[in-house]
Length: 255
Image (tube, rainbow, N blue to C red; front, top):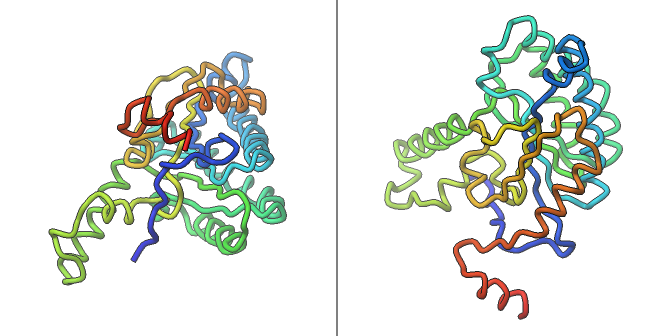
């Protein structure tokens, strides 16, 4: 049985979000604005990943989930897809030891069967190496789509029903949620999308149901620790009601 998800009903003591989910958008436009090829933007974007991982660690954020490659990204030019795969491999090789030393736990979500054996092996080795780390839980979404995630959960539940392990009448929101990616983590408190677009693009559709959505025009390679602070400050100014009235929330805070 999958692990039970901790619901995002109680804020952290610091007021910071416990789980941040990010769509890292704008690498190609960043490069184009500078008269550089798109690969240069992706390489610069890796530096932002490093900065934001460190920023989350320093702030005591529990979990960070990054959208690295969507199931729709296969539609991009083959040369760009191949470069992204090569960059993914080289970045993992370069960063995994530092992540491990800093107690970052790395996991990958998505349909990883589409990747070549070399990349799948490297991803598996990274997960095994960092599995017992107690620091930031870094989840990387690759060949991921929110609809795929929901369908995958439905298929697992259907199999359980067919095998007699699950009664159809027992399927509710809580049980369904146990089969969704990241089920053992708090649902994201704060979603950030860089690059100016105002949509969630099939990302964590189930998990973002009550997430605060923050959009910024800043392109991902320019997103630094100060930008992260701005997003977190904005989040702290939000009143998270989860169906309650504002007065009820204030009463709970005062208890």
